[in-house]
Image: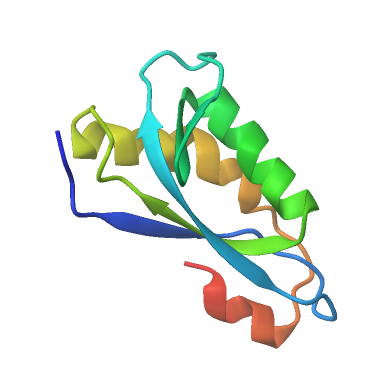
Length: 106
């Protein structure tokens, strides 16, 4: 099922770091440990693979990720609830943040 929805995740870094952004076409599988399978501009994976991919992107200097859900096969509400409940908490730690960084927090 195609969804014309994209969400953005801010992967906070230090204020002095140069910030990069990227987009990822995501097909989030309902099986959390499903291994990541890449396709052009994106991947199909479970939430564990998504969390690992986002951590790897953050380690590479990416600070803003747009998740494009057009290729997602699951119901949109279910997918967004899973991302909110299980993925976003890995990237929303309470930390000292420079005022310019607060613009990307929701």
